[in-house]
Every structure is written in structure tokens, then in C-alpha cells.
Amino acid sequence: MERLQKVIARAGIASRRKAEDLIKEGRVKVNGKVVTELGVKVSPSDKVEVNEIPLEKEVPVYFLLYKPRGVISSVSDEKGRKVVTDFFPAIKERIFPVGRLDYDTSGLLLLTNDGEFANLLMHPKNEIEKVYVAKVKGIPLRENLKKLEKGIRLEDGKTAPAKVKLLSTDKKKQTSIVEIIIHEGKNRQVRRMFEAIGHEVLKLKRERYGFLTLTGLKAGEARELTTHEMKQIRALALDVSKRRKNS
Ligand code: URA
Image (cartoon, rainbow, N blue to C red; front, side, top):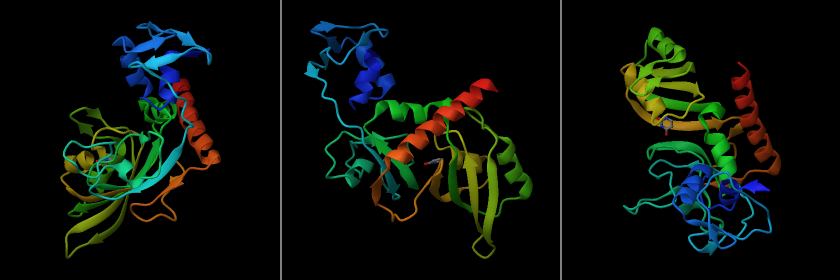
């Protein structure tokens, strides 16, 4: 027996939280009866319907995309702009991005139809190490980079400690390349962190997510995660969450 919202999430309809909303809104039926409570458990023999449509169990799939700049981290865009799922024309499963990268940010983005997996990775407690390389305006002072390392106050709270490394500077052009490693996923976090120390981000790329990198991929290319990678990244998220709980 499994919780209804988990079953809906695994079927690729929505994330677990969205599935909970669907249940509360009375859009889910179990064996022909509307269920609005969140605690209900179902077995594989129960017939689950969302919006009157029976759940079809999709095989879970996991992809790693090298997102180019100028692409929305979404499955559709009302303004008709390119979205990340456009890079998977042959995939029939309803995949969606795990978190998001800004329109102008390039780099590593995971996509899946496994709502459970996505939820686990996106949960604030489980935030996995993410490595970004930023090209910024100006040449940051060591003391300002230290502020980013310690945590800096943004309008939605203080950022957690980060690792920051000045990789290179161009004195003529007055730009710098900085690597920054963070665990959280606040909206436009890296851009806002640099803005807070007076340096506009001109270019941003996510180079690593946990142990996953972009090796072998060009912008716009994707590959499937191996089962081992998928299990390892899930274990990493669970492990981080356990360590945080115990600390
Ligand atoms: N931080 C940002 O500012 N943008 C991203 O896309 C990711 C992290």
C-alpha cells in the first residue's frame, strides 16, 4: 500500500506537492469515489483516476541536459519561447525539469517523469552541492568574496555558507570568472549574491550537480542517467537530509 499522492507523482502527472493539491481539490478518484484526504493509501489493484482519467503507470526515466542559454526551464511557455522539453522530441514520457535554471543560465539540468525523485532532490533539506561558474562585471575584492563564503543577506534570508574561488580576471575588460559552490536553490541565487557585493553577473553556467557533470555533452545535448547514477544521486540526497537531521 502506498500513499495516493506518491502514486500520482510516480505516474508522472505532477510533483508530490502538486498531487496533494489535486487531491484536496477533489480531482482524484479511487475506485470511482472522490478522495480529498491526504492520508489515503492505495494498492496496485486500486483504480486511481485524476480528472476522470485513469492513471497509467509510466516507466520512470531520468535525463541530464546541457541547457543552452535562452531556454525556459519549463514544459511549455505561453510566449512560445523554447523550453527544456523541446530538446526531447522523441520522448513520449511526460518529463519535467528538476528545479530550474534561469532563461539566461546554461548548464546541467536534470529532467524526469518521477515526481518522487524530483521532490526529493528539490526539497530544501536535501540540497545537493551545485557548482556554478560566473562571469561577472568588475574584479571582486577578496573581502567581498569572503562575504559570499560566509553567507550574505538577501531579501529572502541569509544564504548558507558557500565555497568561492576567483578563477581569472581580465583587467582590460574589467571582468572576472568566479566559481561558486552552493547547496541551496533560492530563486536567481547566484546572480543575487553577486549583485549584493556589487558585481553584475554577465554569464552563468552550472557545471556540476552533486557528482554529475556535463562531460561529453555540448549545449543542447542530453543523455539518459545510468541506473547507477540515478540511484547514487538519490542516495546522496537522502544522505544529506539524514546528516542535516542529525546535526
Ligand atoms: N542561480 C542563479 O542566479 N541562476 C540560476 O539559473 C541558477 C542559480
